[in-house]
Every structure is written in structure tokens, then in C-alpha cells.
Length: 413
Image (cartoon, helix red, strand yellow):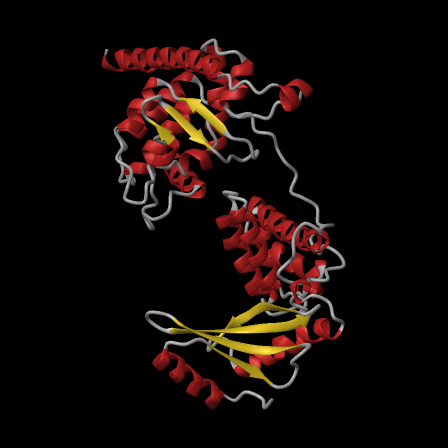
């Protein structure tokens, strides 16, 4: 059979559109073994054209999609067929086992890793994408991922560190290391088929030391807690209102900033005064009853049309990021109108003050979704502790309510 030409394809597309009938175009010989085909299917508004690798094996015909015409040209389809399918067909191996034989590029690796994070519903995927897109621009996105050296990774990290941003440098190092680690494992994972064969021999960021972690100890004393809370209620400078509300909910619940910042209407059970997350940082489902003060605040908010309680000022289709909440707080503390505090300090403050309010450490740990390491908790205990959590939050609500009221009376006097 003669090879396909672009003019043959154009004529066939017109014929399929006019007649409403499906048509298969074959490229060259190969009947009885396998060949490249283009299948035209008339649809109500257009004619679709799919490039397929076709194989005859054990008396049966098998097809595997290669791409769409005209997005993938005839010449490109031939290259892919020869590269990934022709040899498989000649060996009489099923084309269902064929893979893209090209070694993956830096851009391929980073995009696939981010897609993995996103499909796993990891909240860090957007930050990882932003960082890795910048890294790919520096290293060269079209280079083979396996060619990147540790020295080149250092060339990315050192300028960030020298700008006085050691924490950012460590985050970027972590993203690069994790992407390469995922790339190596994805090719050895018998449970999945990797979209690319990266053929990475070693992780170029694997030997780069991490930034020493300094355990935080800062927590707000009672006066500082009230000072911050009252300022958030009535800020003296223009601030996007959802941001101040998000931080108040953080202070009242002690949750991770990413989980509160991304609060969606589907996660708020108003009748039960419960926030219910199906996915969290430690990978475990988490649900908490919120104190009445937080329930009143959340109940007063009308989620935007995308369902977010705390939408971003720049892009309402997305929730505010943890970084934005951090930077807006940083600017205010530099002005001296609020205490020096970070998002993690707020979580530590809740843990400390809730203890002072009489909430047991076990229930505080469960309310904050800290992973319990004993065998009983990890492997056997499946009780959700909701009654105990409610009792703990009731204690906390009474205590913090008295604290805010007491300080208000002192200020009025």
C-alpha cells in the first residue's frame, strides 16, 4: 500500500465530513504485522483524526493511540511510530507495553513530578511548580535530565543563598532533590508506567546538605495574643479582609496554615460546626469541631463563587497562599502594630494556650492532627475522638473568650 500524503489526508477529511462515515487511512505496508494508521471519525461539530499504532498479533488487531492530527503532523507521527512501536511490533511483543523511548528532559521531569504531586492532592504542588519552572529556565528545560550535575544545582542555589534567603534556597534544593528521586523511582515502580524514561544514574541534589533546622520556640503570651487578635478585627491599614479573617481562624483553631488558607465550602459542615479535610499534610483524613468563636466567624463569611472562604486578592479562583499570609503579617509586624509572629508561631501558641486552658495534650495533638507514633494509635485505634475533641474545644472557647473579654474591659477602663 502506498504511503500517506498530506493531500490524501485532507481529501479524506472532506469526504468523512461530507458523508458522515468513519474512514481509516494506512501508512505504507504492514498488513498482517502492524503499521501506522489515521482514523477519521465524524462528530456533530467536526471530524476527529487520531494517529494509531496498529498491530496484528495472535490473529487479533490491537491499537494504541499516538496523537491527534493536525496537532501531530504526518512526519511527526512517523517518527514516533518508528521510535516507539516499530521495533516492538517486529519482536511480536504487544504494543500495549510500548513506551516513549526518548530520555526525558529537565522540563519533562519537573512537569511529571508536579503532575504526580497534583494527582496525589498534595497542597505543595503549586509552590513546587513555581520553583521548578524557575530552575528549569536556569538549567535549560530541553536538556536531558540525566545530564544535570551537582555543580549546576549549586549554581542555582548559591545565588539565592547569597541574597540572604537561606530558607528559600533550602526549599528549592528540596524540590529538585524530590523531583529527581521521584524520577528514579518512577522507572523502577512496577505498578505504573512512567511517561518518560529518564535514565537518571544519580540524584544531582542528593549530596547537597540541607539548611540546619532551628526548632522554633516563639509563642504569643496572652497580651500579645489579644493585641494581634484585636488588630486583625480592626486593622489600621488596608488589608484584603479575607486575609485577616484567615489568621483569626488560625489563632482560634491551631490548624496548619495551608489547611485554613485553602478552606472550601465543601469542607465546612455548618450544622455540626465541623471542618472536614479528606487530605492533609500527613496524608490522613482530619476533622475538627471548631470553637464557637471560630464558627461565628466562618458562618459570617460568604464563600466566593469558586467556593473559597479566603480567596486570593490577585486571583479569586484560587485560595490565598500560605506565603501571602506570611508576607502580609511580616509587613505589619515591621510597623510595630502587631507582635513579631510567624504562621507556625500561631500553631505553637494555640498548643500552649490551649494547654493552659485545660485541654489535655492527647486531645490537643488530635485536634492539630499530629501523627501519634505508638503502635496502638497507628495500627489499631480507629475511634475518631469527636466527643473528646468537642469537649476540648469547648474548654478552649470558654478560656479564650474570657481572655478577650477581660483585656477588652481593661482597655475600656
